[in-house]
Each structure stands twice: as structure tokens, then as C-alpha cells.
Length: 248
Length: 250
Figure (tube, each protein chain N blue to C red):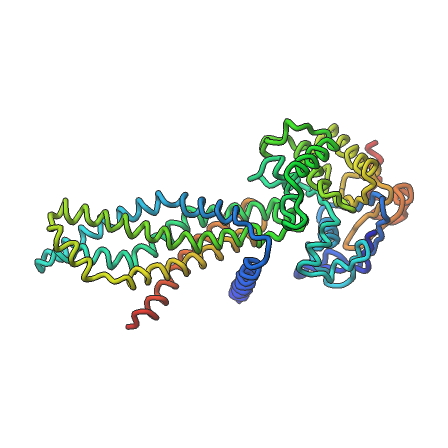
């Protein structure tokens, strides 16, 4: 579904990605683990075409994303839903307007009737356990967990083939974190979506991942199933994981 | 040297941003509702401060002209000189500076906040071009509302000048109006409106760019907003000189 080959990216003298390659299969949840500033978000923004690589290629669903421009790139982005770290809800819009945004902003030829848009918004909010009572609320009136849930509903509303999660559990309490993990598993289980999760939350990563990778110093230090990554002999991976496993 | 290079790079990126905005303005979907919303924010929302400034400028200018012209027993020319100065110079300049302070700063801070909280990235990830959705309506609304508010300034400013000239300085109504007709030509009003159009373009491009290119959290948004207001004001003053020089010469 997603194939990243030899991806390089620098910002000035800061070499963020140094030859990252990975493959994400259809229907699986793939987690990229790494410390702060390791380039996880930069990697994800390449996958959706928000950043252009210095070198390498990103193939999604048979399309070379890094070479697309203009309308073709816009069309390709319809394959994706993305949940941003801080939810990135539009704070000048209500919950309804936020979730409906990907549908209301389609070209007039493919735009759905208002009642169908409302039906889909309510349906996707139900997937994340939110009822119609939140529709007219403003993002500033929601808790952190609710904002993430609304963000996921917005990512799911146009029935994407791939959902990208950028640090979905950062800044959440343990109960909400557990809830968000359940939400990711639920979205995959109910809708069969391919998911890419960027995280430094090891507990969540091991809970939701079918396969995972550890990003360190611009390259993948380990990749495989959660068990294979846990057994990795890479010194950074051992240190990164052992600190957490010792705590358990 | 590095700062000069960075400033030129930033200027170049702003020009490309403006060109991209113009290109997006002619591509569907055309979001008229967003243009109307921005016209209300930039135009209707700024009407009070523009009107108050116009009233004050017209009244003060009439009193000053009366003070100066009385020495030559030429008070009758107060109306004409107020109208002429307002139409060609004071209205477009003051209007542009007032809108920059009120709406331009809000545009830069709103887009800057959207940038640093990833709302612009989110929009792009949902296959909606943020330049077309956020920038184009603000530029079109500015191009329409700057001339309209300049006319508002003209009318209220002349009204203020009339009240001061006729009722306070006791200038007879006849000469006040007659010399206004003598001095003024529709071309004078058009000259001011052309300026307003150029100022609208400059202010909207600079303020949207500074917000769109903001980075680094709340501090970055603050810096972007300050730069937006400072550079818009300078651009308005420089453009005013250039347009006047081209139109009037030495």
C-alpha cells in the first residue's frame, strides 16, 4: 500500500532523514517509534505529500506521491485521512463544520447533498463514541481526548484508504490514552483501514501495531513485528525499549 | 550579509506566493461566501474606525486651512483644499493604515495561529488548497473594500470639514461649496481610488504572507503580526510616493 524507498531530507544543515525505506501492507497498522526530533513527523508529511524529498521515492497505492503536483496531488490526497498531534481542528468552525469539511469542500460536481453529509458526519462521530450533542460545540469547548476523537472522525469521514496518526496519545492521561488506542484498533477492525502511526509512546505502539519500526538518527534502527523489534540487538533500540520495559 | 540574503529570499517567496494566489483566484471552486465573509470583516468591521479617522482628519484639516488661509483673506478656499487633499492623499493613506492596524494584524495573527497549530497542514491533507481557501478571499475582499472605505473616508472627512468650516469658522456656504467644485475633478477622486486599490493589494498580500509563513509557536505568530503591520505600512507609504510621482511628476 505504501512503499518508501531510500528517503533523504535535510533542512539546511539539519539532516533529518538519511535513507529511510519501509513498506506498509494493505490493512495493517504500522507504527514508527522514535524520540523527539527523530524525524517521525517529517517522514509522515512526506507520505501525504506535504513535504518533498531531497532524494528517494514514496509510492502510495501505485502512485508516486513525490512526483505529483497540483490537481493530481490534490486527488491523491483524497486517499488519506490524517490525525494531527494537536488535533488541528479549525477553531473558527463548530464540530459539525470541522467533520463535514472534507465533504463540503469537494468540487460542486462531486459534492453530496446536505442531508447525506450530515448522515455521514453523525455516523463517523458514532465510530469514535460521540453523539449529536457535540455537533454545535466549538473546539475550544472540548477536552483533549474529545478533540482527538473529533479529529479522527474528520479523518474518517471521506472513507480514506489510509489513516495517518501523528502522535495520537501525546499529552493525554492514561485512561484517554487507552481510549485512543482502542479507537485506532476499532477504526481498523470496523473499517479495515491501513494505518500509519507516528509515536514515542511505547505502550501504545506495542498495543496497536501489527508491525513497527524504530527511527533513530535519520534511519530505521529496527523493523518488524512488535516481538521482532523487542528482540532487536541495535544498541539504541535496546536502550529505548529497556527504559520502558524496566518500568513495567 | 546573511540577514540581507534572508530578506531577499523572503521577498522572493512572497512574490511567488502572490503569483500563486492570483493563479488560484481563477480556478474553481469559487468560494463567494468566503469573499463576502471577508468583505464584512475587512470592510464593515473597519467602517467605524475609518469613519472616525475621516471625521477627525476632515475637521482638523479644515481648522488648520482656515487658520492659514485667513491670513490672505482666502477662507473661502478651505472647502476646496480639504476636498482636494482628502481625495488625492489623506483618504487613501489614512484608510490603508487604519485597515492595516485593525484587519491586517488580525489576518496575520489568524493565519499565523493556523500555521503553527497545523490547521493549514490539516487543510492541505484534506485536499483543499489553503492559498485558495484562506488567502484568495482575503485578497479579493481587500481589493474591493479598500476603495469603498476610501470613499467613506472622503465623504465623512468632507462632512467634518464642512461642519468646522461653515458652523465653527463661519465661512459662508456659497464660497465653501463653489471653491470645492472649482478645485475638484472626478479624476482627483479616481486618483485616490487607484491608490486604494494598490494599497489593498499590498496590504493583503503582505499580511496573509506573514501569517502563512509564520513558524515557531506563539512568539513566531507575534513576530509575524508585527512584521505584517510594519511592512504593510512602509509599503503603503512607498507606493503612495511612487504613484504620486508617476501621476504628478516634479
